[in-house]
Length: 475
Image (cartoon, rainbow, N blue to C red; front, side, top):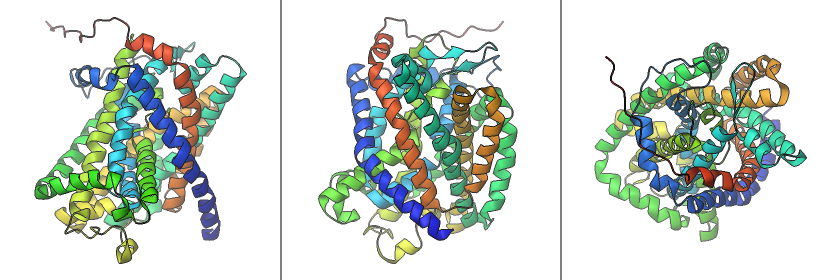
């Protein structure tokens, strides 16, 4: 079994190296730049509007809808998918391989990604459909076939649907459960397979409850889990506050001179920093990947622009808040001048620290080893658990597109099986498989985004009163 995993890991890693080093980086930056310019920096112009729409009517007790979700429930479901192991384990891996500068390139990807996800969300709302039962179906497969009505469009949509089912519905859930199992084993000594059994039972209950139960869970879970992590990270940074200037200096210095800490030539080190930032940034905020549009398509809004600006806030919260706080904790405790990784990820330290426990070591350096490990394990559990819920929905929508509603039960059983399997296999192989299918998802989604530029521009530049409706006082 070990030799088979090792051989498979080598093959998948080679494929990913080519995809992420060339195709992925080019496409992500190209789409983000394209929409940033063509929308006249919508992520800057409409940022305040997006914040007001999200937080101006924030509630954890959204009403039940006959179909779809409220705008906030759709955002919560999208953030549930975005804020997962990519923010903790993924960011840790990016820093270990690409150095502190990888965080800078994550920021770059996220900034342009905010324009990309605006386009994805508006197109998802614009092209969504309702079936005879009133259920909403929307996502990239629907705007791909809108962009290309013929056989080519059907091929691209089918390719995307298969890739997302494998990437998120199956392999992605393995990443989440694998990370949960690893951190719980480190923090509490609980065998990973026991964690897997508990996950399967809890997720099965929610999967069977449909979109309405999912929306009810995510709108309550996401704000609470983000707040808990926020408080813990800020507490650590308060203790290490005198190292923050040095921490930001590390990020900007090693973004352009990574060879000083990554090793090798400047070209090799810069490639590692950028590709790790792009690859993990994609896995973290999912902008351009085509996953979160499935959630935004469920929003009960009439103007696609309204959900587009809300979607941008999801990327902001994921990368510029949650991921950045985690990165600052890691760098300010482990990479600064008195940290064990000040000279880079070399030597004996590589035998004890890895992407799975790096955040635990960072928080533990201030909170104490036991409490730090437990805090990260609990946060990661809720992050990953919420991601599993979102990703299962995204995969389910594409299963229905390909095979019809009767296939949902089979899909759910397989998803639960992969969820459990993730607690048993190696961490590196799981990440590489997920990266590969994530990369493949980007291709048809990016092609459609370019093709539908005119539709997005007609939405973003349309005259409208963008003031939020005033609340009506209850008598």
